[in-house]
Image 1: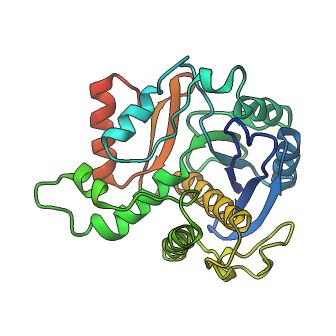
Image 2: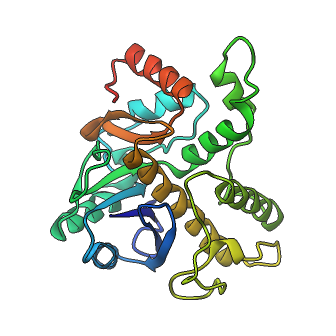
Length: 288
């Protein structure tokens, strides 16, 4: 099995222009490859290559895959915001037609990877793609490491999440971005079940593929374009980790929402899963 995380350049103005990043994990959670692609067909072809000869593929795309609302936000975004979890704000109006993510889903289907709002746990020979949110995953990992063990006695998970810093990997000056990215890589390095360093990766950030994120010297001296490249690698790794964690069936996860209304797969320890489920029930939004 392969687990692919895609940091998709999906926003108007960058779709089809800025490179998206694919990060690939094996069943042990080791990074075995990463690559960059610009257009939808390039992404689909790279995904096909990563799945070739394997017993299945589960892909997490870090972008809103289903946007039914003409204006405003999706219901799933409103639920996550109540819990101080980052959520993409997207509407049909902002795209002016078909979104780049929808184009990507169509070409992925052409290479046998089908969109699903629930990849099956521990099942091989599936080839599915689902929506994830790398910023929310990063905040959950921070929550597990810092807030969950010492959570307030009143059990206020939302309050604990609000106190955690918001991951701002693409915003701010170079000093702020470099500091945020170094913190994110540290979280990934110390995440159980994820192995950043493997022997076939390169320490050169400019390499066309297979960049070793753990060996990059992330500093304000990097250009914004180079920081963008590091950010894509971080987001892709978080996306791949999210689907891998769900597939393993350990440590907890939840799918909130349904495909056509908007759904997101999130890592979620038991206490957080219960809190998200509570908000979903109150809003009449399915979850599993």
